[in-house]
Image 1 (spheres, helix red, strand yellow):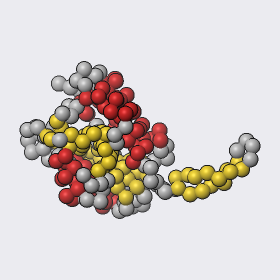
Image 2: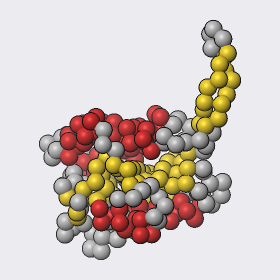
Image 3: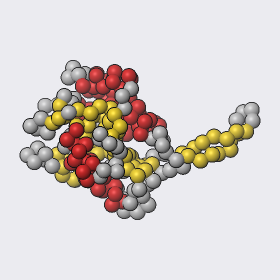
Image 4: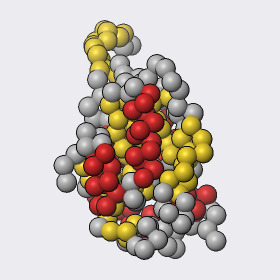
Length: 209
């Protein structure tokens, strides 16, 4: 699939196996989300712009590269919060702008209830973060909000992405690259990813009913 990057790394596949397992506890689930988010973000940020800088080491002077772009993280509440700290470990100066969406269980459509994205001074690159790209509705809403902000480069980071959701996102925003740990084939009648891992938000925050 064009503009879709499935990060097929042995460590990702190892941690993803435990993430999918229904017996994984919420404590371990959160730790796995953290590890996978870091590995995914490492791949997704490989083309950030840098500039040369002269520094002094304890022995001499040398030139090094540093990132010059403003990076914005846009986690989709609430499940996206589980991925933020891992990415901030890699990019401590990143800005975090929250976007609250929930899925109407009858229509499976996203409903926006919170938007902290500003109207001015857009970042250079925005990473839209959600563990699950299922129907694509929430991701589309998020990209629309970030596009309205004026961000020139937008990337989507999802632990799991379903093919129908990828197609829906790229039908609206074909230029937005999607980074995923795995691509699953389908959705069930409740619009959950299959084989998937269940509800990432409930498993992260221990609210399974």
